[in-house]
Length: 150
View (cartoon, one colour):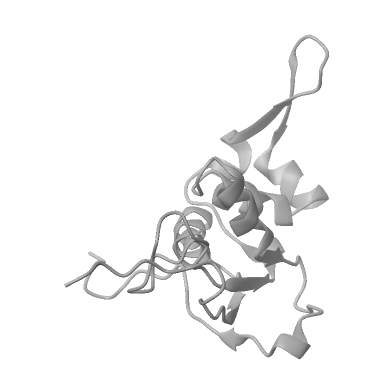
């Protein structure tokens, strides 16, 4: 018995459509990361991009639990002394798609392959997207199973 290793050109990549309305950011991001990496497939190979394309709509309607809208800080370095920071509430008002993109980016591999995986994630603040030609199929992500709750 030989172990199957996928080759870069032989994986057919599907397109999925995910609605971000009332989804918890962390749970949705972890499900998105699994699909982008290809870990949902039995043919997953760590050094090959076996993941699918994902289109997320309504990214402006995602949710955080607790008081994270006020307390969560996004910080970045500008090249000058000190760091810039912004709260999650302000980030949602300015660029809502960055909340989900950053959460997913931090769950992907930190190498060239991770950059290619993140390129397959298409996030839109509203309900419209320009990927109708790829015919993305709706997929339920970010929800807890009934057996896990409680």
